[in-house]
Length: 319
Ligand code: 5GP
Ligand code: MN
Image (cartoon, rainbow, N blue to C red; front, side, top):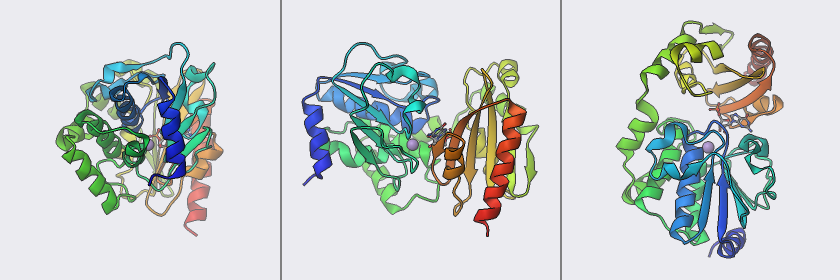
């Protein structure tokens, strides 16, 4: 029998005709895949669905029906859902004017439980994996398209099953999603392998100024870099994954300059370390092994402050 919370969520879904789903700014595969996987489930169940990402669909155009994702919600709805997002601010301002979310589905340990119902399972590798477990008890079924969206979320957040939280149950879920029609090879290629020339050029800008000291490796990407190579995103194009492969470092960081005197910081840590707390202290959040924050200040100042604090953290955690 489904848990009591699942029954209550199912009841809310049944009584809702118009459903709005949102996720975070600078969406990753888990944000886009969870949003779309759940949204397509609702559409199949006869609901009117809005799927909203403030920064748009970005590189996740390869997901089925991704053209249904919009940057702004419109009109009244009966149910608001936020997926893969630990903090309401990270949705952006798109939910201003709507009531508190009815449902939050997330796997970040820093989640603020800001919904009426909160399905927050930090032990799960991806929000998409939580949805795989719960959607049937909410009266929703899987199609090959939904399976593709959910498997993309899992592949994205585990960097292709490489993170240390991947246990055999994750592989079983992935296998079940493949049986439901998801094409793992294609997802892997689209999500993790293929890069545009501009992205590779942009990586080059960051790689030429990579630095290392005291167990950390870091670099930065500037607004000028993006202009120079014509990269339209406001993220690191996953360069942090390259930095986190540096053998000598225990923590990798990347500083991405943003307009209006802001810097986006990403941390990646070796298994056994936890960078979620430091990200949370800087106003962000995330997981033990991967966390981020948007910090006010100019690039050099933010870099200096964050590196000093991260070195301290590494010393403490290595004691
Ligand atoms: P990334 O560094 O790739 O942006 O994110 C790493 C992890 O930290 C992801 O799970 C992401 O959702 C979370 N994260 C990144 N930036 C922020 C932020 O500004 N606030 C919060 N709450 N979480 C963040
Ligand atoms: Mn996620």
